[in-house]
Image (tube, rainbow, N blue to C red; front, side):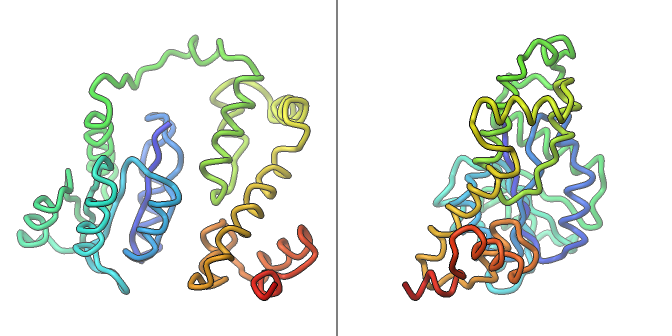
Length: 244
């Protein structure tokens, strides 16, 4: 399952790409988010996305600097530039830096999905988007549970929508939850928390990372809620963990 990352400081653009992209059709995870180039590089090292949408105008590190660094470190990823400027200079420079496409804001559904398909074909020229319903139905509940676990391991910062797997593989949410717990001795959402907390400890060891940033990276929109979850799990706050 391919992964995508949006590097853009505009929430409206992040939402538009997230809603207009046909992720389910292309068998892709919902895109992860970063709000500037520096955060984008951190996210790429952590998530290893296959397709990256990058804005040109961002604080901290702009799109040009991000592309220079990202392309060198992750040459196999496919980069799609998004910009509010219909500017030949930006388009030319982004292509020189390795972007495969250049799309303008506001995001248009058809253009966005054309770019996504272009990237996917470059990643896998033999990719078939027409997987039959019969093939999807033939998968066992145990295999779906393994797919869910793998998804959580790679996308723990996302809000898990069990209905996505239920609708795709034709098993009820209750049944998938039961099979997951039987296979892994832990509930699905308990496992999400476990993975997040283990990753939190790793990130907290890097004192250059702010707790608010770590909270966002782990999928918590409120750092106070993250601190409470961490304290409930480990018995100490993130700040106390760092001091120790």
